[in-house]
Amino acid sequence: MSKVVKKNILVLVEGAKTDVKVMEKLFNIYEIDAKYKIVSYCTNIYTLYQEMFRDGIDGLEDMDILQVLKAREKNIEKKKIFDKRYTDILLIFDLDPQDPQFVPENIKLMQDYFCESSDMGKLYLNYPMIEAFYHLSSIPDDEYFSRKVKLKELQDKKYKFRVQQESMGNDYRKFAVSKDLCNIIILQNLTKAIFLATGKSIKWKDIVVNANLIELIDSNFILERQLFHLKNDKFIYVLCTCVFYIIEYNPNLLLS
Image 1 (tube, rainbow, N blue to C red):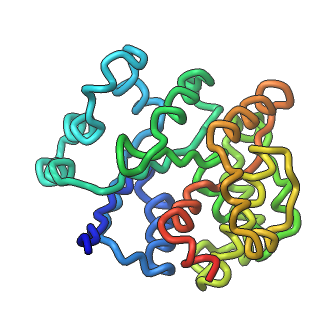
Image 2: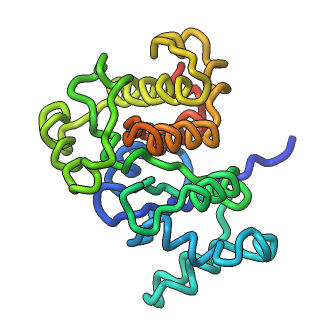
Image 3: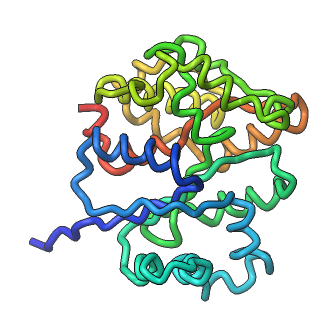
């Protein structure tokens, strides 16, 4: 019998506060039985694009994201993080379509390239940002399936305030403190992702009965649909995709 390799996960998040707290909550609640390190990138995905894709896809075969991250890190101790070997690399970033550097083709290139956590890394884009995790007024929230955010709202920097006002309990510290509640949040986001990827409307409880529905989710299709609405309707659907790693890590954590 071959020895099972213990996972060692690097979680690269955009911000130093909310992003870290959300991922720590998920890893703690689901008792992820792996070594992991959550590191804040402290800037957005468009900076990462400039550092990795300034020449397009040419030369990417020889590029190591860990060395790119090490090169930009000024703290000597933190540099050592990127010298270690990881079984999985997760990239947790916001779409932030209001950013001056936002270019649809660039973000599509990144979503397509970062598609495997055990290889080059896997990109989890949150729409419009990590605060989508908290954007439920109840758990479950029947309105979440159709919840959107207008581009103007993002440009005016009002979305985070809206989430604070509409989030259940108006207190992130007390939001989804149990596994059962987090299960529902993940299932509601999976349901919405399936709709965006396929146009198929299902109930979140359907996934519990038929886990194969999760295979309908395609990150590239979701991004294409969101960009379509952004261009034509000036809105995107609120969607938190970083929660999907839990079911990718072990479906039994959610569905057993």
